[in-house]
Image (cartoon, rainbow, N blue to C red; front, top):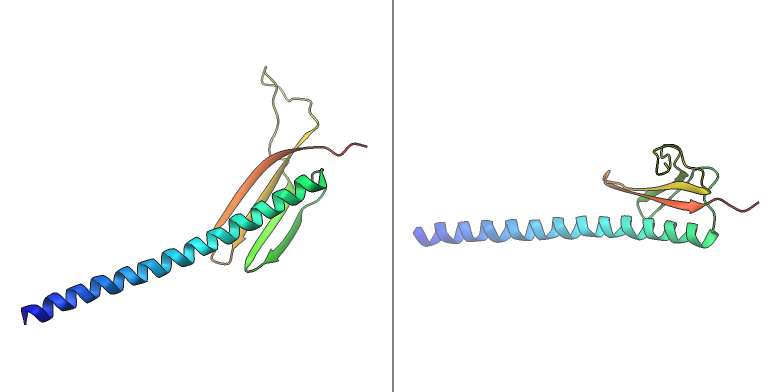
Length: 113
């Protein structure tokens, strides 16, 4: 009877460990997709050489992304006033089906006219 109880506890612990391992694997795959899409969109912006004029969005492999100018960020000079600059804040937001998301904000030079 004692041996059966020990075996039952041992099996319960083993099955919990297997379940946890499967959840961790699924979560890491989702985060890997998010990072891969964010990296690809950032590289696309760098290659284009200019910030987007309007928001752009898309979906790939269960992950949606948005690239947009980010007007909520104001660049300031050393005195704390608004800085004159040809840099434009750009935000990339990538969201998975389960609601987890990552946001990247970077600065890009305005397109030369």
